[in-house]
Image (tube, rainbow, N blue to C red):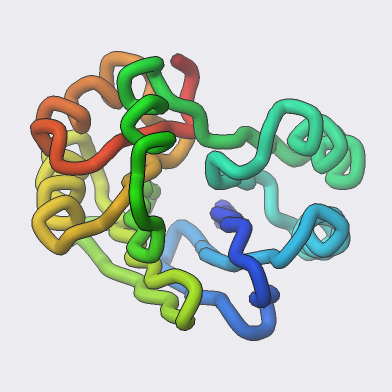
Amino acid sequence: MLKYAFLINVPGQSPDTYKGVYENSESYNVIAATDNMDMAKEYVGKLAADGFTLLNLCGDFDDAITAELREVAGPDVKIVHADYLPEQGAMVEALPEFSKYGIVIVMRGVEEPTEVVVDAPELYTKAIFVKDQEQANAAARKLADEGMHDIELCSWFDRERTQAVIDAVGGAAPVGTCGEL
């Protein structure tokens, strides 16, 4: 069974106070927040010890902290952070507000899109687990229609797949990916 986590930087929150779980017959998935990079290091160490092998990080995590987290986790855990194509990154920088965050995750064992919501005064997060590109595009459109300020994608989304999602939302929200751009 794949154990996967998507970590978000949310001030004032921790994995104890800001966490959602989705489980199916093939995967166990956690969406969780950390308040700072020291907390992120501690949590990544715990996830690695608990058998998590794939971690995606929100765009607040840069190359340097991602490298530090890889050292903490060890060689058996793949860790990548979200990044943006230039025009999408400019949209993120221009956001007047960031309180609604969407995530789209292609995951094994998913048949029908499944939503996981984690909410706090600082940030409302909705992750939608899907099985393929078609469901991903529809999920991203739904998130954009619901007013998400930003949408980030799991590491399954390479440049071409990410572009398909960008096209699907039609500029309604910036889209970044943990995948290879």
